[in-house]
Length: 122
Image: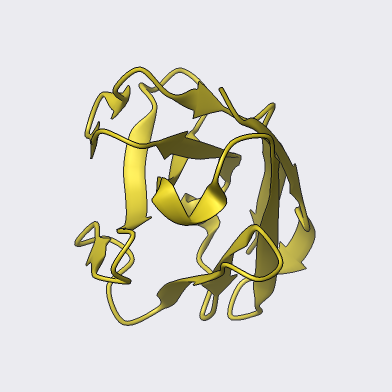
């Protein structure tokens, strides 16, 4: 299995931007579907965005038009550009990887990162 390390979280004012990164080691990065999930206090972890091996993307309705997922196979890294941030985007953001599938419940037979905190102040 691959190892995932997220970075880029922090505190930002509403309307601001952050860029999360997830560096992947082990395995063949290009073979993995990659995704970002988030978990706010007291809530279940939810799928935010997903990018396939062929660069097809999926976004949750709550972030469409504001967040952009991308991947750089040469750098073994997946990114989440978050613009027009809202207080309700406050959560711990997790990176996930799987060579099989990533659904709303998580990566099938895959891996999770340790998470990075994003806090959006009003």
